[in-house]
Image (tube, rainbow, N blue to C red; front, side, top):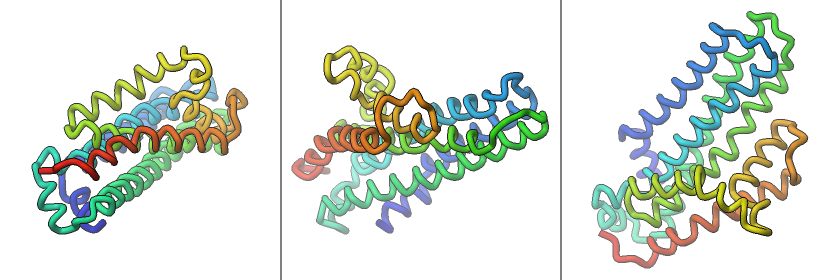
Length: 238
């Protein structure tokens, strides 16, 4: 795992991705400070929506990047010389992905919540700070799931561009079409991750219990992760 952590620490894309997410968190907070909403509910819904989109995109990009780094740079043989067990290499990559997303997500969410509370306080708005915190924090599990989806598509595609395109198409486009499929429509990736977010946020609109939604989210992530994982274990890598 130390090798994967070193890549995240010293290569540019993780730093730029993290910087973009944190910049978005600050800009959202500044927007609330400079242009205080009339509706107090906006102090929670606006940052939650903005950071949900930002963190989901960043998670997908980071997930695909860490999955395709060796393929893009042609260093699989060097990596497997240092650690011949491909399963351990993939597990290390996945662990670093999850740690990175959790760490970045906690910092970004904390920054957004703090600035939103500050904006509400300065505007003397009647806002429940606990409700704001729940709404913003609820974006983290779906974003992490999107990162795992990106990782899976990256492993399967073997290229950064292909993995990002496939992950974006699945999360933002194809998932909407799947909602029209009988029996499956209520259990699409978007529906179950949306229920996870709604339950954590305290939204009564969630259709399923939190445990069921989390289990379905993990199942979707594993389903997308499996083909690329098998490909790396069995393919002739260069």
